[in-house]
Image (cartoon, rainbow, N blue to C red; front, side):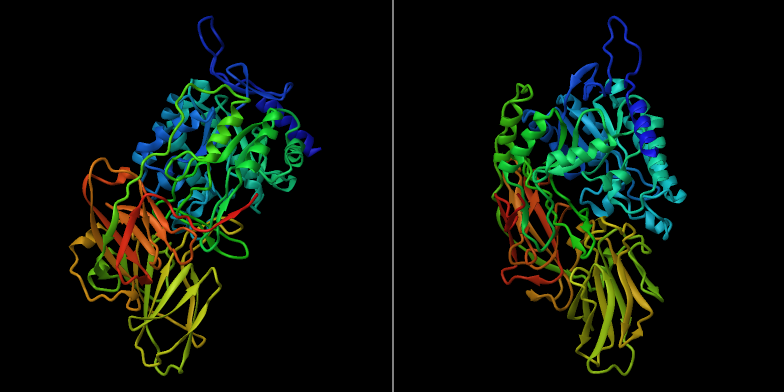
Length: 630
């Protein structure tokens, strides 16, 4: 009976026309609605089927937004889907950001100018292979036992504030107000989260509807299985599913029909490629399989969103990680094997997509995109600046303090970066002594400033022998490789836990917290002794200058031969590199971040510097070995 009541509520709630006001003789009525009788959408009163593409504004510089959106429209798409990343817009509890790369309103306006409708996915949780699924890590500092993605009233208060800040800004751009936003998603794939909290889903719906009203269609997205939909749907929102090219579409849409018996079929995430983790082949989806399933859905008059149409880059420390049996951090590139590459260039998959869509949709009168020229800026020599363990480098730390117990990154109010835990060793160590600790996520262990081993959350390495029983001090440099963005655990605290030597707890730590988000100040440091090769004396910061003549072009920084670290161009954090793990070897460098004349490259290398001490700017990416999914 409850299922019948739920379906009736969905039908009655979403069947109403999403219009702003009654029509007049000279007024176009803007609205987006579900025609349940004919299993279709109506846009401004006319039958409509959308083919959208995912493009997340926060994954590319603002100056490229119009270019990417225009290329999407040129492929035949009539809509764009974007997540809204809460942590980007509220990086601190009392700080809001709505300009630059966070100017979501400008992004939506450009989409409308480029003749694209919008599917808005505001979360608050978005997954998206982003750090903590787009949730701000400071939530864990405010309330350490907070239960995110549930009806925990403490969490919901923060959510209400976030939605209020966002939705008052986008409300004028809802379709009922003549804007491009036709649909607004509630949460994201909530059926995959074990809490299955109906009060939470209804709470989000009630908050959103205060601002959206009947001016856009509310919807949910879940995996194409009834077990996902059971905990993902909410009355008053249109239930949709997601699946890739290998799926059986009869079964996939059949699951949707059990919870959404009437209305258009919708695949809200049709996967053009797939995400990639460190230490695995770069994931690809064959063009032939992608196009075949695409046409099967189009033949059913289904609407769909291609995930991703353009992936872009997880610049800085924004890449997240998957959990489950193994903690698996994602690479910096979010190329995703999408129709548009990480640099926004069209691929064979792009043109195959356009050819397929031209058989079903009217094509816009736009020129076809071409591959943009790239910069081959060659070799850049790097000079050592300082060790992260040097006294002058401690000025990069956001906080240096003494603690009785090792604090988490969150207790240090450190969203990401690295933390150095230092402690005096107890007297009378065995030879060798055994050091044990749980680390989130990777740690380099030093005795008296000399590297003796590595601990790894991914590989479940939790202990190592201490080869020098006469050492005085142990140092553990812990790196956050990204908060979990998917899986059962959301409250993913970073740091070192349960540290002990020979089964005796280690106490009293001198702690230095390094956010490593901005490092331009190192140019004023005085150089110290440095030797290439394994960085057994601690991570080193290096700096190099290079010239760009003419208009700066996109390029790729090759990290081949280096160890593990972070690279910065003119103050912009390009992201993490780790070529030994792979598959990604190059970091994408937007030409918009370069300048004519002298440019600056800064590298923080944790583990190994090759003898040549140089990097290369090349004109093509290297995302390593590949594995075809279908």
